[in-house]
Picture (cartoon, rainbow over the protein chains, first blue to last red):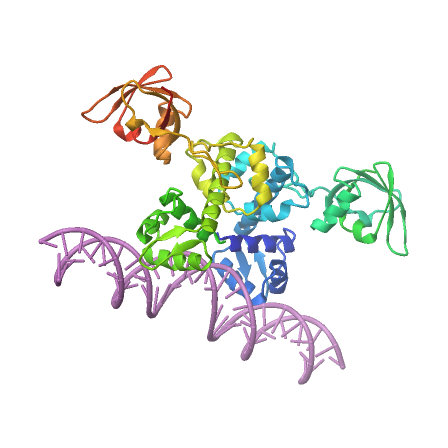
Length: 218
Length: 218
DNA sequence: ATAAAGTTTTAGGTTTGTCTAAATTTAAAT
DNA sequence: ATTTAAATTTAGACAAACCTAAAACTTTAT
């Protein structure tokens, strides 16, 4: 598996949200920041290798082998992110690019030992689940903050947008995973939210609310 | 810098032992396990980029930029080796191939933080010095065990051959870096050595003796 | 000093992953 | 039901890094 092949598998997995949906050539091209014609070339190759199901003009989906390879890369990516934050004091907005490189290192022993060093973490620094060796992971029942109603209460468990800008915004406003969030009021006019986060009052725009995941507690 | 370019710089550095000697195309080809014609191609490219001094038929040497890049890769390689042994419980014969991949990860911050995590090690698991950020490292005054005379005493500080076979042999015989070695007798006939290692008697072949570095203490 | 041997370079070809431009297929709109 | 628009694929090209075979240069040996 080349790095490029791995990146395509990962992209297909992410676009399809892990399901077996048919993914369009254009969607992959956009995600990979490449051209549709390049995607077509690669799909032929991955199809040859039985990693994707591909029929001309009909989109692609991962085969079970392709899916388990994608999960293995995602596992590596997320474990490395935890390592960077926990052991090397990176902040959560700095880890992505480095993990993007580290995820391609080939060594099963390395990943097993890293997993152990980190004490078998279940989630990465952005709240995304880390698949185990067999590709299994718990999907926790989370909702976007924007879907909550007034008086709903929950724990902040993840971010949808994990861009550096958004993460830095959260840092600046002292919003972190694990925080307890309560919806005090919702403004119909602009979709903004009045919140209580860890006992402090907050007002966040709908943009923010639709990029924060919470686990409802009551 | 591509991985391949980095590997060539490293190879040239290793062949020339860090000096400014003129390195032959064939020597590089052998080290890189590739063909001389491929080396020529790459030397032209590296020369274009001012990383090597290259004149047709005359061999190459690293420019100062090329040398500092080679040192940076070696620094990364050796730091990762320490990480694998110290933090992930790899044994010293298992680290090379993985470090060979990890050395190409691009992130200054990653290496700075790794260096810190490991508490700024000066030597890798095979006793080779780790260059600092500026490419400086101490060359300790070591000799091959085979150069010692009867009654010489020293500390085992490194290996010349760091192949898995040799390292496993040392493990099996409980010879490790830091051990105190005394030459009891030398057999002229086959060049074998009678040693005392950490108070135990040992007999090693000339092959072994010429692949172990010791620092003489008296 | 010259032939033989060894080394290095050139010339031309391959694979991988990308691209642009043109052709084809599918989907949408009237 | 056609036409138009959008998505996708094909065709042909390019750079990187490698290869083989042949040519050119150096070195060695007589």
